[in-house]
Amino acid sequence: MSTPPDPAPGTNARFEDTHWSVVLHAREGDSPRASAALESLCRAYWYPLYAYVRRCGESPDDAQDLTQAFFARFLERDSLRAVTPERGRFRWFLLASLKNFLANEWERARAQKRGGGAMPLALDALEPEERYALEPVDNMSADKAYDRFWALSLLEQSRAKLREEFRSAGRAERFEKLEQFLPGREGVDSYADLAATFGVPEGTIKSDVSRLRRRYGELLRSEVAHTLGTHTDLDDELRHLLDALG
Image 1: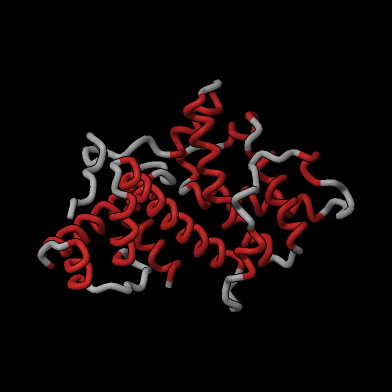
Image 2 (image 1 turned 135 degrees about the vertical axis):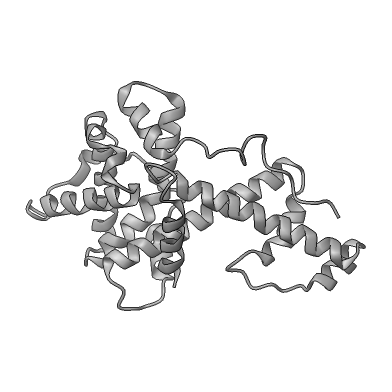
């Protein structure tokens, strides 16, 4: 059985640019790389922010309109002028910005069309209300719900990147078998089962899973680092992520 693909050269030497630095570049001029990264970041936070608005009592339609309108305003070039790493973690900045936006919107007539019809992000793959309807019923506050869905979003992004690494290496089927051993998944097969399936020693399967988990951890750390002004707070942010997941 083949081992998981090695990370790209240099990924262990240092983290990639944080999203903070990408945003700073984006506000200074046109950059396809910065625009793509910023859109990726917005997609990562779209559902946590949507869930926050829903927890505030808004209907599904109004929550979608409000979240879209918020991002439409956030993505305006002038709005990025207020973004600085010194203001703290990016998730804090986004949530504080959303709260200010909602306070202003709630003062306006609800009949007013929000966002001027702007659709900064395509919703074809997001299906927020279908996803929200599957969430367990609880008394979690809007702020805690935001943190939980932020954490889940980072886990999903890390898993997607790991899956893409395997796919690019021509090992998509291997990933589908090994994925069950990642945190948060309930394994169906035992190491012995997979060893028999692939005709390799059980120790080989254990080594493959160990490499898979290690790479997953590296990708998760990188995803979390993207939302920090500096990397010095990374361990604290990871602890907060685990707390948010309960």
